[in-house]
Image (tube, rainbow, N blue to C red; front, top):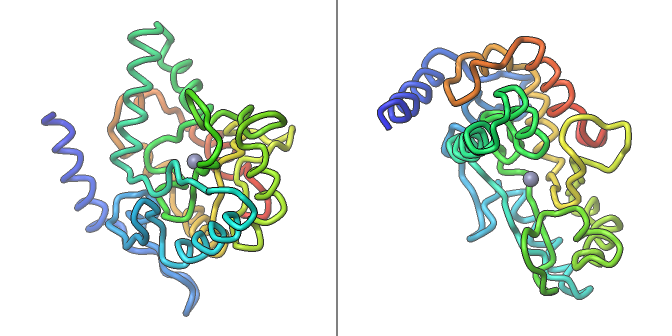
Length: 244
Ligand SMILES: [Zn+2]
């Protein structure tokens, strides 16, 4: 507990003091390092929606349009801060190492099939959403690719999103493209491109390797330079090219 409290207080204030905000061309949006890493308090809109204002408004428009075609877009996950991602990371790390007996490196590889390293999640930005159709009954985990495929409960919504989501600014991030590396296919994860594209470009200007090496959470001592460079290349940047 003591360690966590210490990290929380020092890393937030430490970052705020030592790393200046990113200044881009005049009139370009400015995103701070803490904001890009999920450590800042940002304004979020919509009860149970929790997105930046423009993303929220576009989401509501898309949700209304989907209703008229017989789908109830339900938010499973949207904004998630650094500390929640850290909890997800450490819980999985402990399960894979302590309970399943994996080596630390194998555990990390297994976590990053679907979950991000804290500080690197697109869910930190208030632009990205995991969605399903609220109408069909389904049991068990909802974020499973088969449920969005032929015969699955969310097949209809997925087909509708394929046709329509981009009209509202929402693009699939982790596509089914066979040559894509990094995170596996996530038919549920969409990103509001008008904000997430400039955020990704600001994020790429950070020294991500350096920032991650300053962090202190379970397993991070096993991050080598090579691992982090591959992670950035594959898991952060090998996404739907429309979002780069
Ligand atoms: Zn997601």
